[in-house]
Length: 98
Image: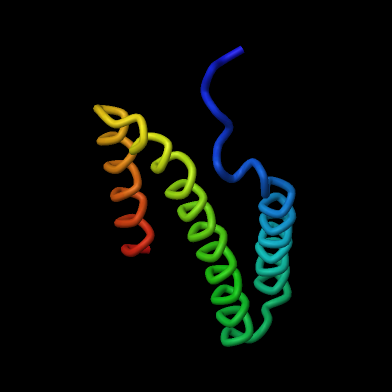
């Protein structure tokens, strides 16, 4: 067994899984829409909804990471804190670029 504390999102794991299953269903729906040759704008509308759902999950995961992992590392200080801050900064940059 490891001494690593659980990740911050663990307390909301069931909610994340439910939301990700819904997004998975949206992806299957998009595939079906293309298979059925539905109208372009309708497909784009669904792509936009799925993108927003993924962004929402990402932002909540980032918030959990900052509130739990980064805060714990900052309390500990040293190289671990520096690394967690770098990770968070890189994650934010990826989200902003997407």
